[in-house]
Image (cartoon, rainbow, N blue to C red; front, side, top):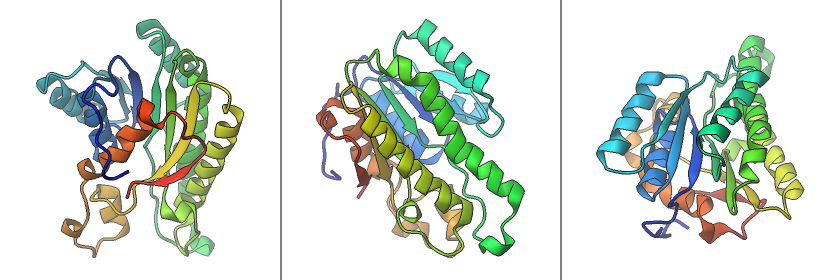
Length: 245
């Protein structure tokens, strides 16, 4: 899929919500989706970063995105319901949902893992995708061809010492993806997980501070698979745990 070439209008007239849209892979995906015709809802906690992505998209003459600031760590069920109601009012449907926002936490033995940090990671990486997906399923069902993508990790498929809360949360994402894919098998919604693998992002630099980032692909370079899974070319792909490269 790394060699996949998306047609220019692959996502024309589609409405796609991206979490963690202000930086890294979320920023790259938002720009890629907009470049292929989608109206992107940019969700993140830092308004300034979202505004920068908004400016990049509009300056490239792509469909005007929408900004929706939200701190997933503190968001309540009502906040997600309000978001879904806003999307219903403004757009009437939702064609895609990219769960990208995550907290890394610290690389620490379980014996010493900070309990408060563990709860924060589960809130952002597990509870938030659950509440957001639940709130948006009605809108996704109004699409003729909808896609939900969970961003996962190698340590969410094979546990590794010291990865603690982050690893456990990604295992949860994989399980959630499988349950949803099975439940929605006979609907217009497909659900998959995607492991970007080693990519030149701030989170990667935090996890591997001694690594030379110039040896890694940029977020823009792994976008073909993100486009593939969000567009109609992957219509028959459901319940799969995939890698970006």
